[in-house]
Length: 425
View 1 (cartoon, rainbow, N blue to C red):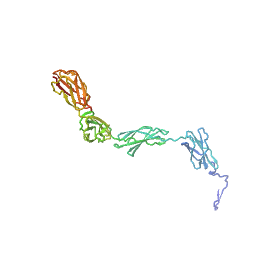
View 2: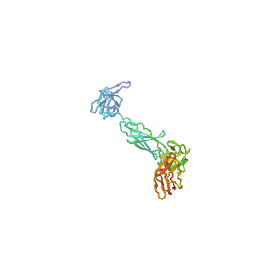
View 3: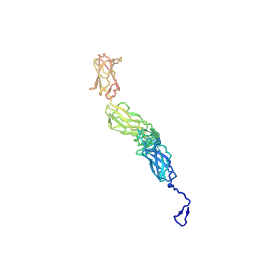
View 4: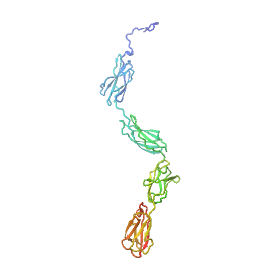
């Protein structure tokens, strides 16, 4: 090359047979990169050769047997990849790339790695929340796996803890498990929980919330150690208060949690609690009904750690107890006819009268006098009619045996056993 000095833009070339510029050379074959499968498609990566300047690229699609599938797919000059669409999910493909410019087309590259397009996995369904069990600064949560895993394996779960509406903690667990111990919680704070499943597609919708539980340091629930009246008591005073003594200090004792009922009817009452003695007292606003069967119930009562007492109920029957108001013959009577009946009158209707609970015996030897016994509740009377004439000038004892299974009123209040002696003439 000779520079002609002083002459702008003019060069003289000598001894040059031929000039070849990079844009007038057929491009070299591109370098194939990685092919990545998608849903009915694949992304083919490649790098242009250093030889020549391509004006475009062509991508050949090959099936598993190496046969070309469809037409060549084109890519612009500045491309380094091409998304090849229209592929069949489940079929295997490889790819080759060539470069083209005005001078011609390169050879195809080597084949790419084989790829198989597939339908991408879907999110799993939401799990079903199970139980939440509180412990010290932690809660054990259980759940049931979703009915659908979205077409790919569940690889873990995400658990969230809430205090009211506020999200306080998120914890993950690896594997298709059904329980987790959620740690880092604050004792004395109530929490609810939900859980979501994780698979290759991502995180599912969250489950419904669990029931609220409160972590704490102590888990022994309070119990009732004493009651008045006791369970099953009879002849309870109609004006008596009820009391319940607890095994430890408790909270929440009120007219809603300590309730007295006659049948299904709540008895209006004032309820108080003495923290020093751990005694709750229920004072009815009015006298209780005579011969009524009452049920007292304690529910929703907790200790200071938050442990809820098991519901406790007991029943009792109010008095009065039946009494004997008159006897004929009376105690100590003499000169009683040998052919007369023994008549006993009661304060109220009774039951449980039999030859065992109402009888006449001879005082001298204890022999039982056979008798026909008749109960007439219309006039509250029992008649003992000896089947044979009594002996003259003989002492006889009448015994009426009371008890919860013997002579008692219709509510079940027992008669106090009564005996007396008379003498025939």
